Length: 369
Ligand code: DCP
Ligand code: CA
Ligand code: CA
Image (cartoon, rainbow, N blue to C red; front, side, top):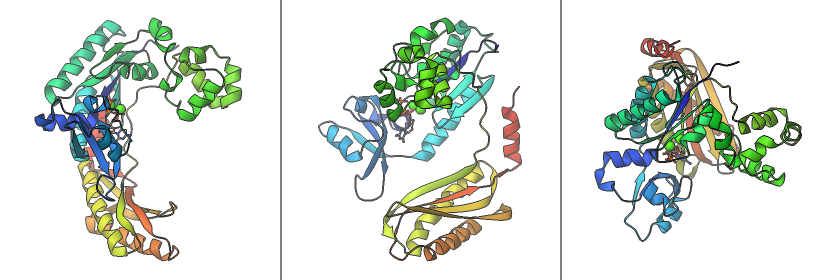
């Protein structure tokens, strides 16, 4: 049997919007909406996230910017374009703080992480709670960002707990409380239960995690297949053995952008592609990664996609090589697609990483056990 574990999950509150508030105090007490503009005309694009004041008006991630503007038309709201460099910088600083509190650490995306604190707390939930408060205070003091924290016997419970009392929440679920904690929650609180699965579960009369937990495993397997059926059964019963583990080096760095208009003009494509090249080359430099593979990707106006790549024997050292290779690849790709098909979006990707000296040191630093 696995020894008792204590896992902490941390999720930063309304993260992109909170970064903007931190940088600009005049935003205080106003609805703040962070937007990802598509570049195809004013106000076209989607809401990335919004602060909690804006959420009261129904603004949330993923809705069109225009819809958000309508919802907030009578109030003094602020709409800002996403500034990813800022969010990445803040995220990195907070992750460094979090890592220092963990026996084992796992970052998930830009604003979440798991900390296995079993050893340093002696598997005590009381000391885990104190630790969580310390973590929260340090992040607030040093980075001026509020986070929500969940504590539980595994990653599944810790993550659900962190989402229960946002913002600035701290939710503790001891092993003996797991069943009662999960039972009343709706099934889509479980990771992997999306819209379709929720509907499928409603069809067999399942609404809550408690109901799912009581359902015969055989019935679940019949309906969802062996792998998913067993997963749902275990998850609904609060069981999750997955370890907290440091994620390896990124496999690739890429960016994709939408063209101002559909085109197959090479210069128009390269204008955007070179911007992306600058970006990803810098990012690889920051991470001290050398790459050997350069790839391009195009989404055409009919939503078909195509990609091409080239791998070098030795690491690519210069931005010029990256840009020239991207150019070659786009040229070839255009030649090989029918004349009437126009490009709409394009991306550049680098991969085949080898770590520079500094990055290697960084990686061994992570291995604490
Ligand atoms: N994000 C995005 N588009 C989405 C969802 C999220 O661009 N459809 C970005 C913006 C968010 C960040 O990812 O700030 C983190 O996503 P979360 O789902 O954790 O949402 P928030 O941190 O914004 O809010 P919450 O306080 O609910 O965690
Ligand atoms: Ca968040
Ligand atoms: Ca998140």
